[in-house]
Image (cartoon, rainbow, N blue to C red; front, side, top):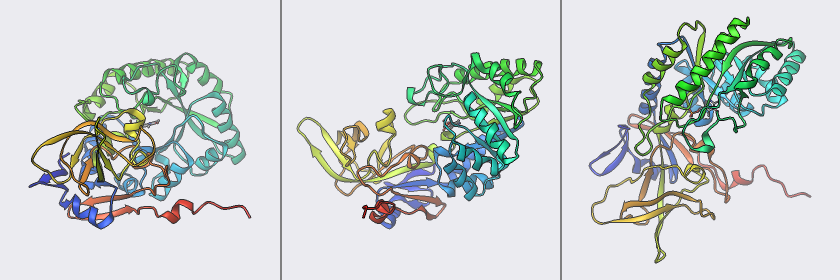
Length: 415
Ligand SMILES: *Cc1c(COP(=O)(O)O)cnc(C)c1O
């Protein structure tokens, strides 16, 4: 993360002191480095070139249109999971022929929107879904290109809430029923069965679950090909993990090489849907200390950012490194870093050894670029925070902080 570095005792994002941005936009806020984003893009993009591939960035990881626009301009497409994400992607300039649409609950109006937008492919997660897609496509006089998302029953060895490829999960079609789904879809006139898809989970830090899943998918591919299906797209999802604490995830090139060797002589295109690995460490969350509180039992550093802004610690007990923006010498204290929300799950870090921070000090919460702002809410009637993008010595607010008026803008008191 060499774009978030200390010079003397001050944290900089590229060439801009974080403290300078905080005084300009207030706290809390998300701060992204364009240089880091570019580097992550380049590493993944270069690695993916050993295969004939399309990279469809997973919009839900960080959906800001400035981030999307950068990745689309560089030639990537989008992996979307809702009509709202399709809308964003289009506004950010996506080539809709590079959009794949995943998710178990696509509604009729979302399917219609996607068909009218001429997306590349629907990743279908159930038979009822493919029947609905066939019907909607028929009504529009279109043919929907689809792949089935297969649940290979592989343990991704990650947090249970972000495991998606185990048989007890709601995602995909079980490997047992996969062949039947393909056979069944032959009867449908308005769908073109062109792909095979899987995505087994997020924040994977080992290569073996990927290998297991790809092997299962390849075996199914061989069987489908032998039965006359023309599979032109193999979508292997996202899920590559990042370092939050001391994880050592596989490098994208290790991951790609491994996939290439398993796929052997497959001639079609491979689709990747990376999210976290691109944006996760491109961003930090900056928050200010409001109070130091010693309950006699424990120290609490109470900050102005909470679980509504960054829910990963509360939701997944996720670890994010927390460092004061201005380094201090002297004694350290052990404390929980907590937000102002009325929930005991509202913490950013537990039992952290921190320098003796004072009211008004800024803290940087690392690894906040993925599933940070995109998962934030207005809970406790807190306006959502600003997002800022740094490019060398300049910063730009890419999403304004919401106001109190924004909070009630869509509400009415009945006459
Ligand atoms: C969330 C998601 C991704 C991205 O996962 P990361 O772990 O962020 O890479 C890719 N594909 C699908 C279908 C997803 O739901």
